[in-house]
Length: 449
Image (cartoon, rainbow, N blue to C red; front, side, top):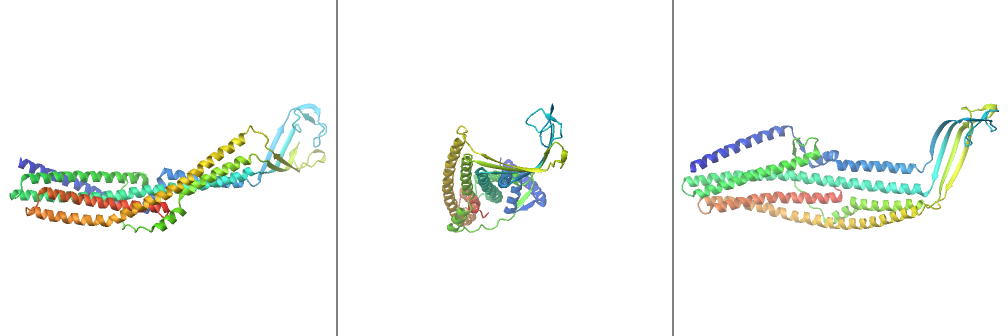
């Protein structure tokens, strides 16, 4: 039985060695062509590929153009109008000025002649509070779109940061798992030597082998988790998610800024507040436009050119066709079945809801600041403790293994010390990632990322 166990163990070790060798060879091959990405480069790449951000950017540009259109609506328009009209004659000679003597009159009394040619430059201007309200509405919509674009940008940044640090943490956990596998393999060797020297029971070897197998499964899970994190990040960065890439060496985490500076920046540069404020301005502008429909509107039109029975500067009988005309129209609303009043009420309802949303955004900002700063502060304070725990756990494992070799401790103590060290290293990785994410969230809230 012991021989079979050793044979199986040797086969397992050989298989794992071959597998790890193949993985290392593949990693070397991929790494030779892999791009090394910093966090800023990853964010820049994601901004060119992420559809939600692209849609927000397009909306912001479109509404900016609409604002230009609303402003242009205040200016006069010019049109070069050309028209040729033919009307069936009624057989009666015409008696209108500008027609050839004896020419037939048109069958339709609304038309001026059997043949009529129009070639005029027409200038038109509409004056009313509706156009002013349209500008206010377009400005508010453009401001809201700009705020929504910033919200989308910060959301994308937060997503990339989370995935980026997730990949980095996954790599650290893979290294920790590989170290744990090495320590488990070394402990198997120790127990086998002690068994061969009749200093330990075979149960110690079995316990060490069980620990070895567990560590190998943990390594496999860590590699799988890292691969998943890499794929999720690659989806945002590359057309092909299988594109190999590596992360730039992580720099030391920055120090946590003072709370006062964080609060000042967040209140000054918060897109959620700007979006809520712009939404309120949109509602107010819609109310203004609705009320403007109750007021008169003036339309002024001027035309210069020809409107005659022949296409030319001069007509028959020495009549000159060129001339000008002007008109002014004042439209005064009288009754529309209370449609405008209902639109005003609709706008006021939306305006009240926008005010509630604005106050909610203000409360949310205060809560987010408090939560994020408290999270970053707690993570920052724990980092030194986590480093000390790893150092202590590593020294504890070393001493426990020495005591086991001398027969002063049990195999369970060694297994417990190894598990403690693995847990401490993973906790340190998680703690560092927690602080980095909390700090990044604060930077996102303040717009400094």
